[in-house]
Image: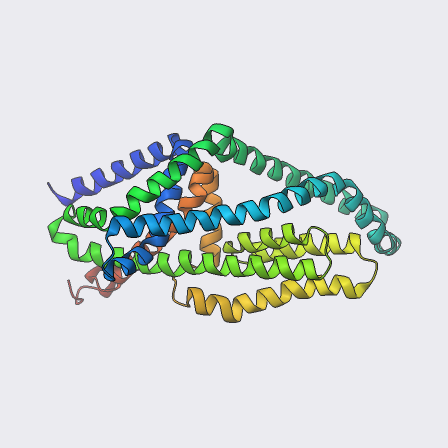
Length: 355
């Protein structure tokens, strides 16, 4: 079989895989989460195995500790978060009215200084933006319900994910060995090299970024609660957990926290304290947490991650969001590999270049 036919087969296979992923995106959620858990915990299982503990026992102990920790955190936090979510939802009109009263003097000055037609255009633009935001939020909530939060899907996530994680983590090394045995022999070395690069990229980003998000969630929640912000626990945990989206997570947390602070507090010092919590957290993330826990040679640019998350969510829902970063890492590694091969080729160097 010539290379042209091989390339065609690979392209057709990738297209069929994408179609199948789209068709089964809702069903695949528990398995994708199970793969993520197994990948995240594989180094711990390898370490315990090196100490003489069997792989099966190591898998049971690690997953038991992991799910107990997760369940314990949910049991402790869910009642508090549920109360804050319900209270915040009930008080949204009051908060908006308080913000309107706070902004009324500024808006009055703006109306006095700007021409009437400019004020009208600004009002129309604000209405359009708010309408788009409401539509976007409604779509996100609808996607969460239909894609992953319906009762049956949630039940399957709770029941199937631990089983999938157990079997995958127990057999992880054998799965990798089996896949390695299926590689075409002529290209096995190059594929292994690129797969190792993908693994390094994912390990640095996924495991490191998860640690960063956890630290930021604790810091923001504690900091905002100590600052006296209503719903500080909810805003802080939410801001920390969405910090895996570069810049967007911190910006949303700052905007929501500041808006609640402006509506709640009448003194500037309290508002600035809330702002300072986010500034300190973002500074710590940029100069300490990310360099220490993620590293500087991840190879995933922030704008590429944001695009991958948006594209994955638009194409495959929540399953696509979960797969976005691994797929982005694979594509990034392949692009860099293709670029290096191109720069070494005679096509780039010209007739006198090396083949």
